[in-house]
Length: 172
Image 1 (cartoon, rainbow, N blue to C red):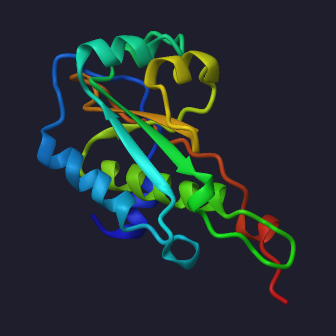
Image 2: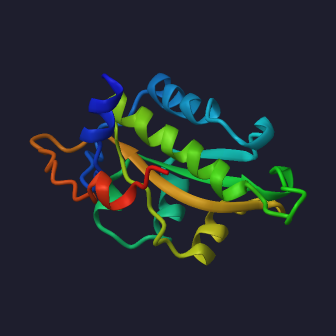
C-alpha cells in the first residue's frame, strides 16, 4: 500500500474474528517493522511479547475488560528497557518513551499494511498485566496491542477527526 494511503486509511480496530489467527510469518513481518524502528543512538531499548497461547491470552485479558479485546487472537505487549535507553547529558532526559512509541507506531502501520487489525491500548490495569507477564526488573510496560483479522462483514468507518495543518503547524 502507498504510505500516504496507509496512514490515512489506518484506524483502530475493535472487532476481531476469534476463530482466525494471524499466520506466524505475518506476525514476524509486523514485529520486524518494530525491530527496524529508529531509536536514540540506535540502542533499541525494547522487547516485544507476542501473546498467542490460550493460557497466556486468558491471563493478559484480565488487564483490560472490554468484550472486543477478548476476541483478539494475539496480543502484543511492548516493554521498554529504561536502563538500555539513551540519556541526554544536559538534563538526564531518557529517550525510552520516544523510542518505544516509534517502534509501536511502526508495528501498527505494518499490521495495517498486512490487513491485520490493531489498536494501541493504554487503559489496561498495570498491576494485573504485570502479574500476567511477570516482566523483568528493568522492563517497563508501555502498551498493549491486540492483533487479528476483523470479523467477516466488518467495515471501516474512515471518520478520522484531525486538526487542520493550519491549526498545528507554524512555519518559522
